[in-house]
Length: 168
Image 1 (spheres, helix red, strand yellow):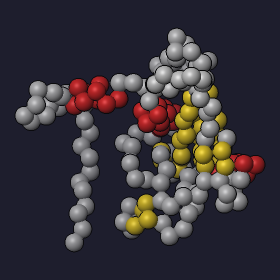
Image 2 (cartoon, rainbow, N blue to C red):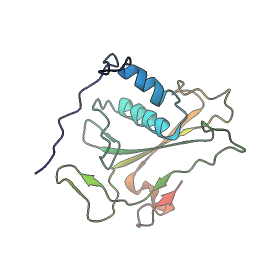
Image 3 (cartoon, rainbow, N blue to C red):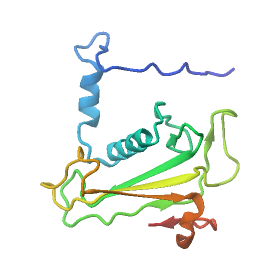
Image 4 (cartoon, one colour):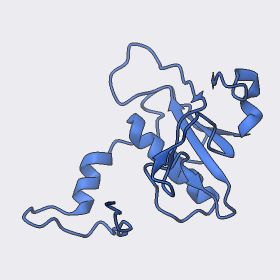
């Protein structure tokens, strides 16, 4: 027996919970209102890349990459920044880790049998603000946002194509 879920319904935010005086938008405000947190910053970076390549599909949690471009190119998005949402004694040192990994294959409903690189392209997004006064997550084309795109084997100098993985 399998338990295949139906496709997720697209939400507008106006939907209400049964038995609770709250909407989906209320939940989003609760869970994702701080765009500096690591997981939400990552979702935002994925969203920005998806929009840049004109991918309109919803995010798929278990895909072994983050975005699929309309031409089928698979994209892994990494994000980092100097500032965090918590008090810091010093700025963070941004790093990006890329290494072969097991991936989930929805078609076979199984994990891959070997570690591998799953994306065709890797996009590295860095929020460069170094003070909270300068931190503006809405300025996606401003001076505090930088990005780099590398093909899968473009990570070779850091060991990205020889199986060791790498940090950038």
